[in-house]
Image 1 (cartoon, helix red, strand yellow):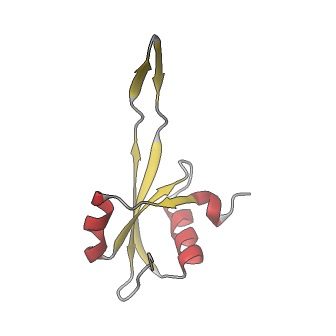
Image 2 (tube, helix red, strand yellow):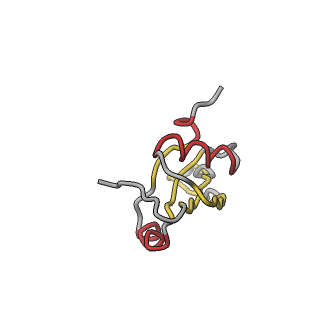
Image 3 (cartoon, helix red, strand yellow):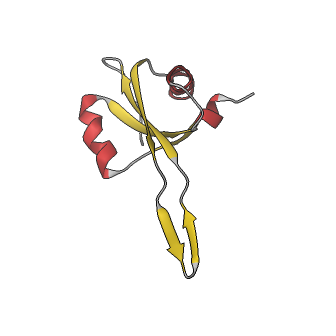
Length: 92
């Protein structure tokens, strides 16, 4: 059985994620097999906030080459979580 901490891998702090913050949105790296309901429950449990909406997308891995070997970086899933009005995640 997966826990909430298995679903949410990391809170991403990138340039793109800081653009979302004034709109009360946060960017998370999540488990690839998790759905929006599980992500919502995990964020509410871990950060003690009320989640309004969850949008997800999958980034396909890129083909990479190291010397004579060809490989691929893994696919990742990200979630943009919109919090309810007046809610905030303390990043400090």
